[in-house]
Image (cartoon, rainbow, N blue to C red; front, top):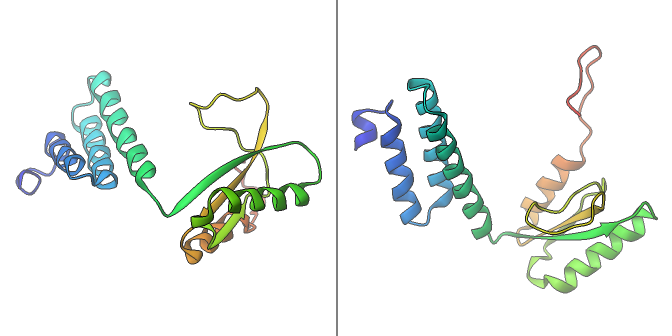
Length: 161
């Protein structure tokens, strides 16, 4: 109700985020906290510490939403510049053995240049193959299509990669 009465005040969106968090609806809490941070920066402009805290809050809610997601699983496999096709087959087989409930669609990113998440100890410079397994075949196929499709190149326009 407070958002309907005053949609431009960041505190109202922050209250909504707190409510969603209590209901364990973390993705919606993240969205509300993100809106709160944007409104705070646009309206108040001051207090970077508060803006940083709001950003940490929505990032934490996003992480909580991702950790609660059960439609896919991930496996990192150390990768050297060996025969990539064999390594991908081996990674898919290992994934299927370790996560049999996520084998509707298994996809290993062929680029093989992934690093482990921040909180995991790894060797500097070590690259990993990223294997994803999905419970829903259509979601897996869609993701694979987006990752592997060739993007158009426009002459004269710098690329981001």
